Image 1 (cartoon, helix red, strand yellow):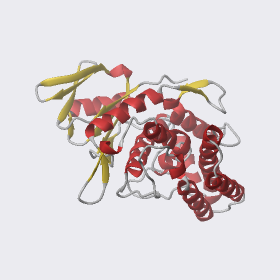
Image 2: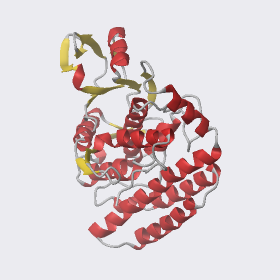
Image 3: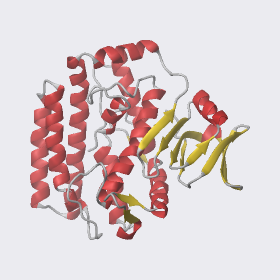
Image 4: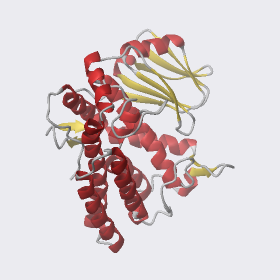
Length: 338
């Protein structure tokens, strides 16, 4: 199994990264903030006004170290990519499948089913731990109906409609999962997020999307050509499809943990003139530290039946998807929690 390497999150504005022998050096003005052996780094994520030397960019491309740039608040801007890894024949099959709706639906159906099932599991876990709720019980029943509908969906349009209905059901009771924290959630709002919960969800979804993109590239698949989401310039459609499996069990539960354990509070957010709600710098660091710790927690993978760090889940699923596309397995086993 692949070893879980570290991710560097660069959030201090006007920092500068460069290569010094086989290490990555981070400076801010004349101050050295850190120096890390490159062999231990899998990804470098730069948020805001961060500069990277051309030599380090080239080195990251050669060594398959993911290097991506985001706005200070987590909106994706660009990524540096070296030579494409993997067998070109695998990508050619991927492109043919993406153009074949029957093939696309066969994979997309599993991704959507996993998303709905995992969301249902999160709600059921809440009821087991904190008692039944009429609203949660009703939502679980509706999600069960959505799961049955997914099994018979014959087109991507039908699948997206079912997924949208299920998401509305799931987020319609998300406020029930917040326990005495002072936070409130009125529904999913993306661009821009207008409350702290939406700001956290969007930020964490961005982090996982990057992990999915890197994992797909690592096994030789193109993260921009998907089966569930349509192609669009700049959209990492396959990475977003893979993300669907991790939203509820990984991202949403992580956000709920931060809030319910009071690791983040209302005062950790600020509202801009546009109405967008953002995390303050210190709170963002708190989140990223907790995120790195969470990625190192080991769980039993339900299909591989071995202990893997949570941070390697995107790699596991990318590997399983590549095996299916190559014809090594009859079907793609999505990530499902119990």
